Length: 349
Image (spheres, rainbow, N blue to C red):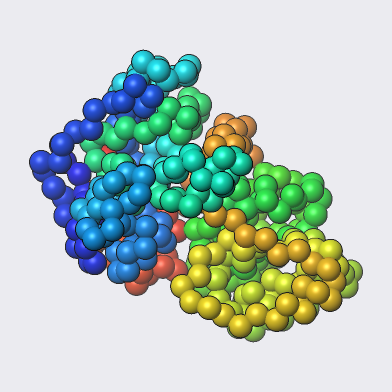
């Protein structure tokens, strides 16, 4: 079959002779339709982290470069293994949770498979990927999409759940990239009151407003902490989400919340940054972090999409062909990131 594979740094190739996977007894075989390109894909292109090298195969999949890429994908069911307990049928539209876990480490045994000691992702760490004609995944990781959801809208839910947001609370979102915009939509779906956004790019500010931000500020010119306190009668917001991942955003996220407020780190960091714990101590604030997602997050998003409380279609700024993923996908997201949010690779035709 045809598949886009990662062979090494800046080396993506559409290979024509990749063996089509066989559906295991406890697996579901899916024909991918749309695959999203996210920040992790861009990072891996230049500096592989989740993609296993030839010298160090992934401990769960046993695979190493080249691997099929594409971990954000939807598609249709091609085959269902005989041991899978599901109501799914061949032809159903589905979204795939790309989690790879060992199911045997301490985190897995406690139910936190997203924190597995050998964590990985389908489409990054072996086990196939969305940018192919077929991929097989565990039956528990395939979620049926309701009829009113198109395959190109197939996620930040986990972060908002982790924050234990209560309806009517105020929130600050630092950074309105794809993850930040997802958080904004999830906050709105969860019933947040004021959704304050700090973002420098004008186009992304416009996206934030469209998706539910009630107040938008530019951290280059505005005092974000002061604005948050001004909008909350001097107390600060109840919760902040750091989706920017820069040193200044950590400090702002901590200082903008009120006493006993919550700070959720959603960003992935490439290097250490200075941090003063007193920004938490004075106010007994709680700092937590999220990694990836769990099955309940996928189902929560699907339910919100079905009910109409989330309408993320406008996050899709372009659809491209598998033969031009780098030229029409990666490069625009790197060089023109102010213009794009989510670029999809269309495999449906």
